[in-house]
Image 1 (cartoon, rainbow over the protein chains, first blue to last red):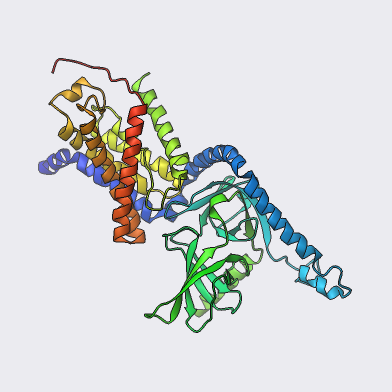
Image 2 (spheres, chains in turn purple, cyan):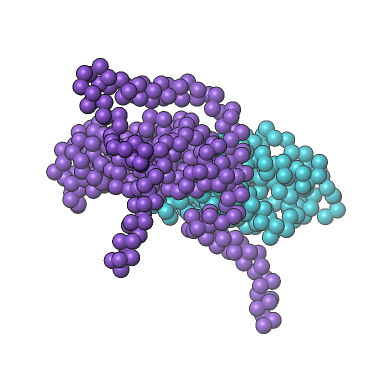
Length: 285
Length: 177
């Protein structure tokens, strides 16, 4: 017994060091579990407050580019409003209201909720975006996040107070079900961590003809991301001899470097769909 | 200014500069300049080793909170805090010099060269451990090697500049040893 105490006294610093290292590695490994704990929340509110102050100053330098992107978004929306308005056949106006029927009972498709980007990283291996706004406390996980031009930014990972932490597409855990706009094949889009703004798309069969510049959109298979949001455009295609599918790299549509505003997308039907899926799972077990 | 107040001010400044200046610079994907752990190098010689590691843990955790991924910088800072006393013993010119001066600096270590060697070894360990933990998730051996070496070089340049700009008053404490 005495020897044990002597050992602890002799190697006390080494033991403390190993303890701290173990604690750090535990933090890395169990990030999501830990972060829902109280400590992570309060840390988030402190860093969020500092980030907001910093962004107050920094956003002035990007006013021009954020104005340009808003102008582009408005142009798109006005064109949609005007589409077919001069056409005598009123049926074309239907494009604006795809869900027809009793307008009091039909559930609306998706709801966009705006927020300000107060912090954003692109240089790390796992990147996050922090949103701030008065309605952010109503956000929940995992909601899709898009930029003002409807390009995918990421999905919400955590909400505390008026701040929400968004897992950017530039993250090792980011996986998205993607679809080719032209031919309709679906695949999985991931980020390999080498180059910001370049993603890899796996699972596209070899016989599909692809050209540079083809659009890649969200498939709409998940309850988080609505169908048809632009993810990016094809940058290059390589044939992988060892597998049955193509190696496709995609240049992201969203410019992660100068995000200023973002929308979170709320899906009112998500709860219903999830409940159905849950029920089916129980039955099949 | 008392040591505690000075340290708290330094802690805040280093974290803010790292999180809002250095982390916003996109030099290259292989180069991430780190300066904040200089705080640990500037702490006094006579600090308790356990306390030093605890401070390292806090420093790393604070910076990690800004990156929303706890653990990486925390582990690297704890390693720096653990290794610092050994390196001080190696690089201090004669026995008892740590009693004469308050904290590590070019003057107390007998010249800029020994001090920069001391800083270089700690910087290398900091970056190697930090990027090893990242590479463990992302893979890539050469990526890890190049990122460690290049980032260490750039960070050392920053440390040298900081040492030249910031004048730390080094009181000559005693002559008795």
